[in-house]
Length: 302
Image (cartoon, rainbow, N blue to C red; front, side, top):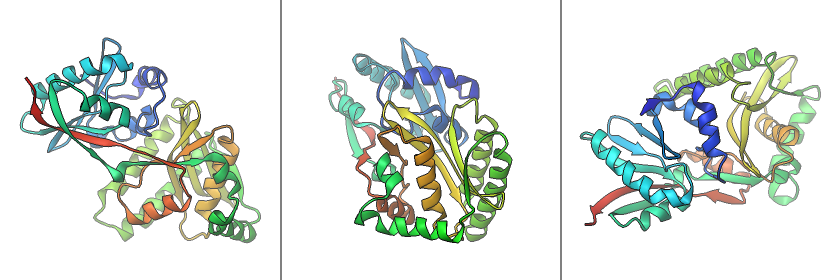
């Protein structure tokens, strides 16, 4: 197994593009962003992409990326690798899609305790809902957007380019400093800041789309994402100045309208169990949630 580097993107893209995955985690960008925190290792064998991660307590496997007929054999190989490498750590399959949870349920050589991980469910919206904000259910969002437009009539939306990235980095610094003052013990803020800088370093190579809102030449909000599957785009990051009313509504609406109007769905990822984030994601009225599951072995079957 080997560590993840930016040069591995073509290999991962080949596997992720071969089937219809709805889990926002199954993009190379997501694996790259969180590789240091989760210590990813990967290998390709018999046209199956295997991905493992670990921390102080858990040695974990992600679902094998392969054709359905290879999944049962892949489970056997994963369990063998886990037994050889986990040491004293607990082993789990983590944040797998429903289709793979079903494969585990019918695996003949072990029984699994399979649990839904609600904090990791993805929120999926109709792209046209996010663009038009039509009807009573989006009345509050439309009010915020209109208030922003009224107060900042000269605000400008621009796609992220090499010329815009330095301005986005400046806004990211302000965002991080603001949040670190409010949460000085939260090391995740610093990690996220660093990994977004890394993404900006590889922005064109990762084939991402991004957008920014500028007021008086200064970036006050930015976002980026990519196509997840044939009809869905996934939004990886969205940062904005929280002191500007309606700025999140503005960057959300503009990004989808300018970059993703040809998509049916927009996946805005998970809420991580954070109450405020859950309320914000629910307020945009998702049309579906993408379920994710963890699984632990409870017994071997002879």
